[in-house]
Image (cartoon, rainbow, N blue to C red; front, side, top):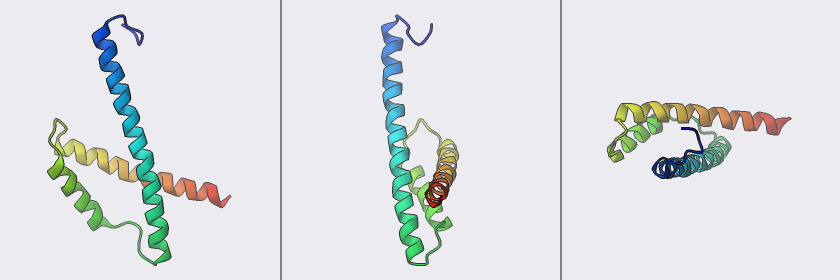
Length: 99
């Protein structure tokens, strides 16, 4: 069964999953914008951008809020990637703006 399956149950689940995926992308883009603004502010105040204590707090906060089925190990893995990608995206935007 391909993407245009005639099975209405499969189609409904796929639509719900796609809608959720769009929300994830929107949330990631919003995070990038907010973190970019935070980086600019911190730089204007002479404050180091990366804050390992804040990142540890984030993992703890999210782990306590997580009700599953995503495991806390999976949550940490995802947010480690999210944090890395956000930092790279902000750096790439700055490089592009400097050109």
